Image (cartoon, rainbow, N blue to C red; front, side):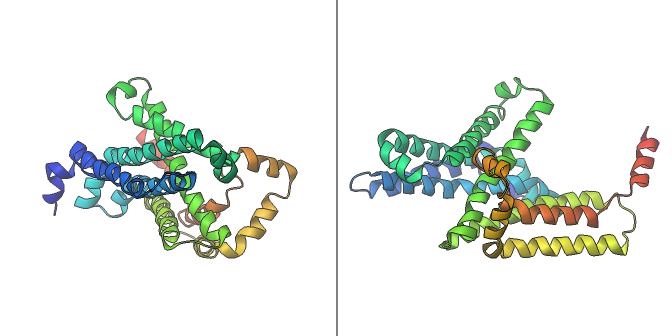
Length: 296
């Protein structure tokens, strides 16, 4: 199996073009079936391109954590090709950007009457800014423009934001609109478990630094994790009440219009799971400080 993942056509630019070219060709298939292009059809192409893009960003989010949780030839191959998988996402998103431009320029009335929503515009624009910055700094000429700290900030922040946007969209689809498709559930859970791997990998790292857990820590952490998992399944039943509570204040209602993802309902279950994990893997401060002193 290890030798298979070393094959030239499964790595680097060969992998990138081997996946990106078929994706680009697939963009033409629905268009070829249109008798005459309309705003609604271009709108469907926007959704079509997103469905090709989303799995790649979810995978990029999970790769480094999967390598920690499941070390092996496959996860090493994923890690080695993480950059190219990210660029595959960029290609699919470039198609979405093209369709959005066509929609807004040639079907202006349809776009602003049926699709345009100010906060979506803010979130989408920020996402494309992050994506452009990440693509440029993925190459040597762009990386020279920033130092290593700036590079990490751009890529880590960008990855989280680009994960959060589609994840929140699919969360709202299954938690609010009431008519989700099977693919909506699939992409929601794919995004959920992609981020969950990061929490598990973080817990694995912290677990190496902890002393024996108290019964209270174990109970509180486990309870919060179980509660967070239950919230992730039952969002349809609590979304409305939580949203009304969190936006009942005027300042919060205003932030909802301007701040991306506010008040963060899609991420509530993962926040609680993360908090439970932090308690369950509570670090021994004295032990960590002793290790720092010894290293000095």
